[in-house]
Image (cartoon, rainbow, N blue to C red; front, side, top):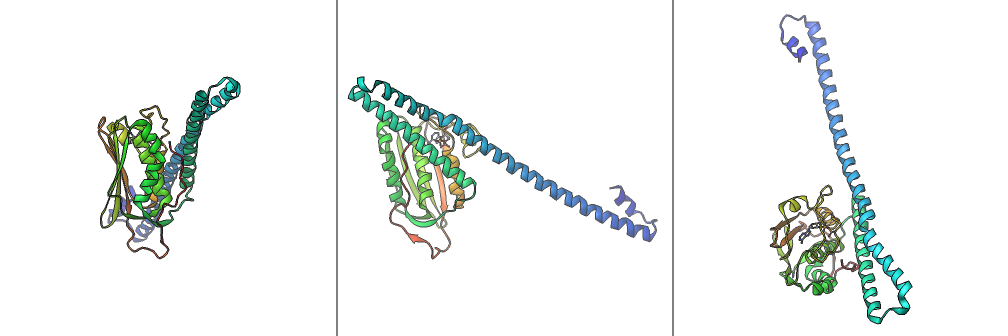
Length: 298
Ligand code: ADP
């Protein structure tokens, strides 16, 4: 600053001015370089912070959420071992179905955990095919029909007869998580509707429920690693806060958007978009059925 003031003076000898100007411009270059290095360092710190939160999330899921169903499973196995001789068929059936439920929860959680970590490591790329949305929704409905029946819920489709150019496995994973959540946060007699609408540039898919809804604080914390929005479902189902992160990861990989609207006590609607490719690449395969491996329900 002082140097600039000196350079404004008219009484400086010409050779000194040239030297000072050279010094000034070198100085400015160095300052710009330092600024750039500082910005890079700050960006790296932000990435490391995020990776650290991911690692924390990972360990908290393993330490806390896997312990529950695994502990139940192990207890039930112990019970069977000790009391098998004296158990009635009804007791055995109850124990077997509780073990089945624990195993299904474990499987679902592990699957989400693996897919999520794979996506975070950048090793997941969408394999785009033409997916019949109606068939994908049918598959998800089938997966959850038992859970919906137990809770006395109605799951319906609306305007799903469209083709979506996307990764079928990812589309199913998103819908599986959103429909699973809707079931988790609904009460007896509530309704869930999966609907879609197509515009010129994108397909918008919505999973709406008439369940318990969310507070503005929960809505603000959705799809974020650093928030704590997990709540047990209406029947005490566990929540890890991983499902929506995974949905966002997959929607992002397609260049789409995901968001939620809700009023506490009046249900929730989750929306996501999948852009329509400008020209369908030659590599796109036509698929008439969903290409994914069905996974077990929550
Ligand atoms: P999880 O994988 O355990 O199901 P999510 O990431 O899918 O966790 O959801 C995080 C939280 O968002 C839930 O614990 C709940 O508080 C809220 N949430 C998600 N979907 C709904 C919904 N349909 N209705 C009400 N709350 C919801």
